[in-house]
Amino acid sequence: MSFWEYANPVKFLNLSGALLPYFSIFAAITIIAGISWGFFFTPDDYKQGATVKILYVHVPSAFVAINAWFMMLVASIIWLVRRHHVSALAAKAAAPIGIAMTITGLLTGALWGQPMWGTWWEWDPKLTSFLILFLFYLGYIILWAAVEDPDTAADLTSILCIVGSVFAVLSRYATNFWNQGLHQDASLSIDKEEHVADVFYYPLIIVMAGFVLLFVALVLLNTRSEIMKRRAGAIMARSRM
Amino acid sequence: MIALIIRDLRISVRAGGGFGLSLAFFFIIVIFFPFAIGPDLDLLSKVAPGTLWVGALLACLLSLERIFALDFEDGTLDLLVTSSLPLESVVISKALVHWLTTGLPLVLITPFLGILLGLQNSNIIFLIISLIFGTPALSIIGTFGAALTAGMKRGGLLLSILVLPLYIPTLIFGAEAARRGIQGFETQNSILLLLGVSLLSWAILPFAAASVLRINLR
Image (cartoon, rainbow over all chains, first blue to last red; front, side, top):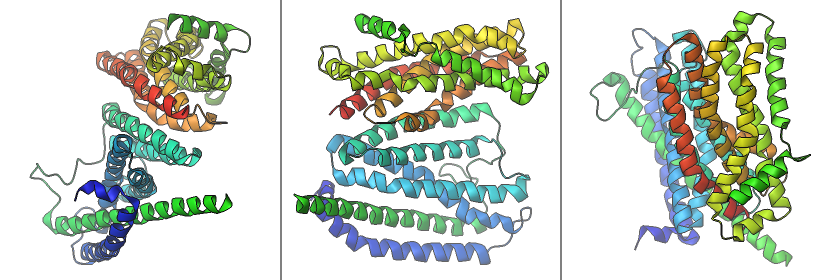
């Protein structure tokens, strides 16, 4: 038994089909529980009032948006090294979810920024790098759509993903260098003592776990439908012959 | 490799080779800015570094499609792939020719355009330095983008969407170096970082572009 066994599409379909309901249900439970805890059972912030509750959507979506790209990077490298089709399709499946999370992060950030900073948008390093992340997702998705042959598309997008990661990191530092920010530093971290206050912290962790589960569920779902779409295409091609 | 460079240079300066096209484009973009912003030289000199940088970037973008398109159509690229020259060297020479025919002329006419935008003579040097260090990065990143879209019909728009996000670090450091220099701040950090971006791009992108070309020619 090795992990790579699940690179076989049939085994992957069986396993993911069995896991998908659990991921979906747990994602629904944790998101609903975390958000209702956060929205209704935590106090308003002494300065920000009720707007602090945007936190429960903003932080998890931004977290998933960045990590979705990492997942795509890993999947792309696995595709280039081991040529497992499931891996390439998983990277393809994650991109629309990543871009949706990026847009959510940007929009909730704008809604939060308006009352707090008095502006919808500011050319702050964090905001700018998120906008750049959005551009990278856009290019990646468009390249997938533009190339007809699926294996060529998988190869090209994988290399774009790797090169894009290098330049995305460069852009992150470039924007830091370029402008001072309004955005606060990381509100959660493993090594630092300072967090957001505990009352906000626990529901936030639950929602974040929920978003990650949701991401996994959606990626599994999308990958499954990609595999099935490809099979349907193969059957059509065969029947035409 | 040298033969390839000389051949590409010859083709590009011949009629229909596109040499001077991006130069004219750069010229027109920069001349359009005063019409749009107004003839106030003070204001113009403030936006001049950004204008010139964005102009250079767009002019560069315009000529990228030609890097591989013609060779792809007439089969030269297939010959180059099967030749004894490593594909990485082909990519490097293509990018070098692109820089010689696009980047370098842009740098050379920048002083004149700088005067049109109200820059002082002593300040233009910062723009030239930042462009000299920055345009090679634009060329090699663009070559990678051109390699990605080499097999596609009408890949031009796709090419610009793929390449523009990759241009961001170069643009930020380049324009920052020029702006700081003109405002009299120290420029060493931004110029070194710009140079770093250029060198990094020249170090890794030939490999990426060559592997992408192999995929496209499969």
